[in-house]
Length: 294
Image 1 (cartoon, helix red, strand yellow):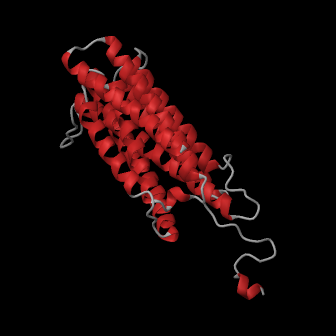
Image 2 (image 1 turned 120 degrees about the vertical axis):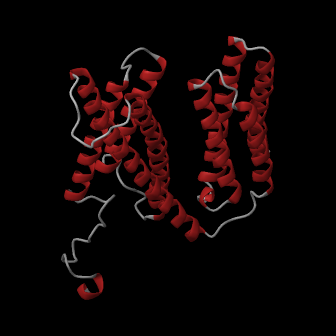
Image 3 (image 1 turned 90 degrees about the horizontal axis):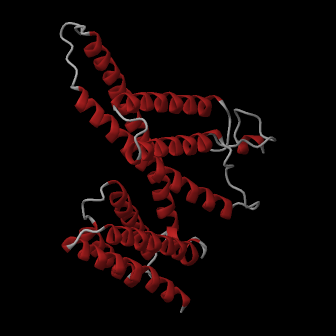
């Protein structure tokens, strides 16, 4: 009974936000905007608690339940809607996203009793974790390249110096646009990679006798969290305030993020730790398998 009450609660929040979004179509007022933002955020918080209570901590059901994955997809669409509300407040994306949320909610309720094979979905989550982090690394690399070209082009135009013969760089506006897009996309992929990594760590901890997974002070995990917080904070400051305005700041950010990411990868390669390298039992000499040791 309590499960349906929480389900109805966040659905009502989304329905209220959708009705207010329709009202904002006819009359745009600050009160309607903030009401939509509050109800959407409240619904997302209630849905997060719902997923945590009824899927994650019931035999890790979220990784095998079809309905659990649909509810995670719904939460992702709601997070996207919140992002668009904050950074593109004049546009009304909620008029198109909320109907999809309602449709997916109906589907999730009807298929919540179906389960995927646990091993297959476990491999899927691990593959998703790896792919998102690789994509985040590629976006940071693209940001590093466009940031370097931006600084080179800006310095050339400032000093009125010609480039090397045959070398043509894009305009400053194009490079700044590509730079900002690479930062935003890398934040999304990095956030998805961190969230999936936390869940994999939870599964590992639940399956081990000691009940402990990889420590948060692992250099790979700590570095990824620091990089994510730094890039997100910079994006919020540049979007909501007058600090760090201009393409030069974004270019310097992407170069700094690439160097920091490179240092994380170097540390992860050189230092032995549970996240990157498999743990070798102390009783088994390095270079021999456990069967040879027996």
